[in-house]
Length: 383
Image (cartoon, rainbow, N blue to C red; front, side, top):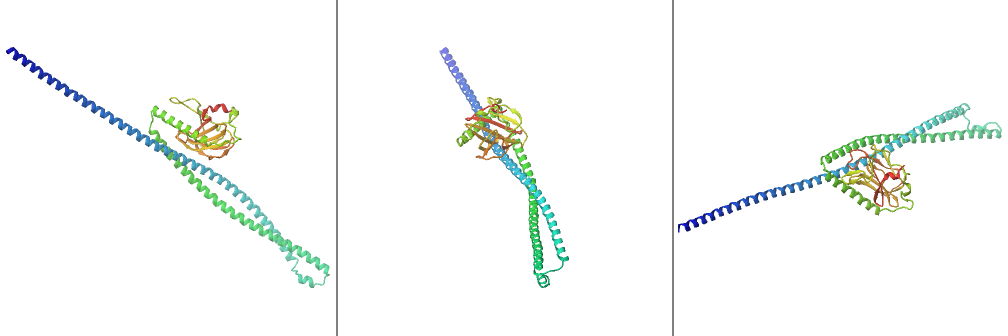
């Protein structure tokens, strides 16, 4: 009986110990699960924060890129205004020079006529005051009187003619003097405009510099930079496809197929990046980047029609020419665009000015040749 009771006690104690063990194990599992959930929640929060940060950075970069576009366009407008003002200034200076020469000539002519009139008046005075009545009443023959009357009539007509000419010269001189004064005022206004435009230009350049500094603070890793460049290339391709559909090719535009090794470069400059060289990751350059100073003229490689003339993300201020037969040439990173969509341009005609628009740190020209939308090596077309 005692053995039975002892066995029952042992069994009961074992059961209690097992229950305690199970309870402890359950409690441990709950603690582990709780810790796991807390860690998972923390990771999820970090992911959410990271996503918000990426979105905020993306929005900020997008705003900065929009500001960069505005800065580039602002600089281009000021540069074009400065070009026009400088041209007007030179034209006005030339007009002033011509007016000054004309004024000198008229003044000299006026003095000559004054001398002639003075001589005629002195001659009339010294010969006496003869009028028609005295001539008719004197005792000379009618033939003599007629000759004298004819003579004095001739002198009088000549004097009247000189006086009329003198009045014309005086009138011309007054007109030239007035024009000269007006042009002098215009020249002063143009000088003032030049000063104001230079101040505005420096201000826009500083704003662009600040924008670039802010953009460069948002450093991109290699993966982000690759994604950015891919997006910009895709944007360019879409833009070219869109404008190609708008092309109305002229019969005169026969393309560039027969012009290999015959064309001149759009600018003279050192090649910074060649066609086909590595750009970022698997991306390669689809064109050529030529280093050149700001403001240098960019010239059309061949005659064509302007298909695009605007700002494009990643490429700045861009001009695209249609040469016919599926050939197009592209000129990017310009400071200012000199032609508008639809304009016809001839070989060697200035179409833009070298710049560093689109976020470039150095000035230069990005240049492409495309055939049916596909980029081809431009070097094959130049001398």
